[in-house]
Image (cartoon, rainbow, N blue to C red; front, top):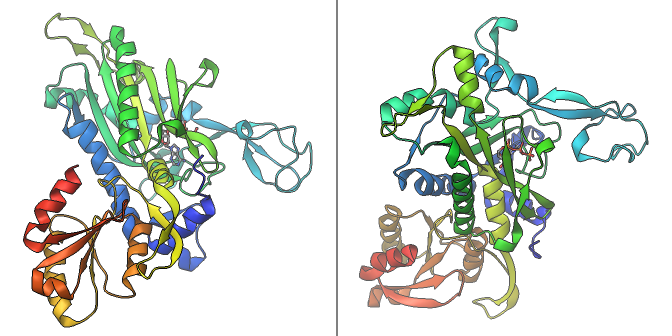
Length: 442
Ligand code: ATP
C-alpha cells in the first residue's frame, strides 16, 4: 500500500482543490453521491479520452457506440439480470442496519449496535435501479436504469456488424453511466449507486477465446501502466467457478491496493455466447456471424474487459499522491504534496504565473496564457507568493509552471519549472510552444 496516503487526506484534498465534492453539499449532502469539480472533470475526461484512443481509435478491429441508458426491459430478462443480478442482503433485527452477507462475518456482532446473532437470513436483493416510463406508475411501465453498459453492445451487435462491415475478431466499446442499487456503497467514489464504466465486448471464434483472453488481459496491464499504477499494487484474482457471474466461464478480477484494502479495480470475463444466444432466443431473431472465407456460420463468443471510470480516477489519484520534504522558494523546508499524474492525465497541463500583478507583466502573461490555452489546459494565477503558487500547482499535479518576471520584458524569455524534478529552465517565448510540445510527447 502506498505509505503516504490515507483516504481522509485524499478526500480532503479532492474537496479543497476542486477534484471531487460531496453531492448536493449545500443541502447537507446526499449519502454516497459525489460531484466531480473543475479539476475532477478534466481528470476524468482525460481518463476516458485516453482509454478511447488506446482501445478504439488506434485499433482497426474496434468500433464504439453510445447507447440509451434505459433499454427495453425485456433486455434485462434475456440477459439474466432480472432473475440473478442480486446480492445477498441481511438486516440486523436489533438496529435495522443492512449488510451484504458476502462481505461480513455473519457469526460476528453487528458492526453498528454490537449485538450478536441478530442477523436475518440472507435474502436476494436485486441491484437494478427501477423507474417508470411515462405517466402511469404500474407494472407495465416498469423500466431499469442499465446496471452495466455491456448489454447494449450485444443488442446492437447485428446493426454494428451490418453497418461497420467488421470481421470477427472485432470488438465494440462503450463508455457511459451505469446504476446499481448497492446495499453498502462507500469508500468515497469506489462504490456508488451511479457510476461510469468503460467496457469492451470483443467477439471471437469459439476456438479462439483463450488466446484472445490472454491478449486482452495483457492490454489491460498496458493501460494500467499508462495510468501510472505501480505494478506491485495490482493483482490478479482468478475467480472460482462458484463465485463467477451467471454468464462467465472464466473471470479474472484485477485488484488494486487501495488505502482501504485490496479491492476489485477491473475485471475480464469470458462470457461465451451466453448473451448473443439469449437475445436471439428472446427476440426470435437469428444473431450469427458467417465467416466470409470459410462460410462457417456461428454465434461469436465474447471476451469482456471491463473498467470502472471512477475506480480508475481513484487509483490514479492514489498512485499519483506523494509527500516529500522540500525547500520553498523562500528558503524554508516544508512538506511538498505532489500529485505525480502521468502528463496525459493531468487536469491542468501548464500554469502561467506572473511574478507580480503589475500591468506590464499581465500584458505579457495573459496573451501568452490565452495562446497556450488553445493547445493545452492552462491555469492563470497571479496571487500569493510564487512559492505558495508552486505548491498549489504541485498539489493539483500540474506538470509545468511558467513564471513571467520583469526580466521577461527584456529577454523575451520565461522560466519553466518541472513538477517532478523542480528544475527550472529559461526558455525564449518564441520557442516555448515547440519546447512544451516536445515535453508532452516524451
Ligand atoms: P464489486 O464486486 O466490487 O461489486 P462487480 O464485480 O460487481 O464489482 P462488475 O459487474 O464486474 O463489478 O462491473 C465492472 C466494473 O465496474 C468493476 O470492475 C468496477 O470497476 C466498476 N463498478 C462496479 N460496481 C461499481 C460501483 N457500485 N461503483 C463504482 N464502480 C463500480
